[in-house]
Image (cartoon, rainbow, N blue to C red; front, side, top):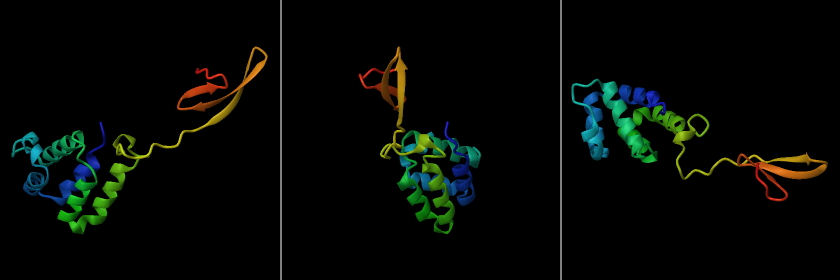
Amino acid sequence: MSDHRPLVDLINTTFSPDEWRIWIRANYEAIVNHLPAPQASAFNVITVSIETLERRGEVDAKFFDNLASERPKRLDDINAERARWFSPILEPERAPASRTPPPVTRIEATVDNDGSSDSGVLSDTRIRFGRDRAT
């Protein structure tokens, strides 16, 4: 499971529970029926909404743009959370599918098999040798 807590905390300090429900209805009406009952805690409502949006692939650039548009005085905090959310180093599972994968590490090696040398390349967790064997 992804770490939603920083985003939940940001929203919890930025919106009242009623404001959050109104914002969700205005921007993501399709998930309104997934939200807990009105008497649920703000933390629970926000957590469920973020988890639901994430499952739907909607915690994206547009999500953060909508937050920033609604709360421009919190722009620095929103942008910091946007950077954390999409950071491939801190949260690789959240990196958008359209991102270019990291470069493949190549390690050249020479292996001595029964007195004969063979060179190969370690790439993509496979070792490829001159005769296209994989180990």
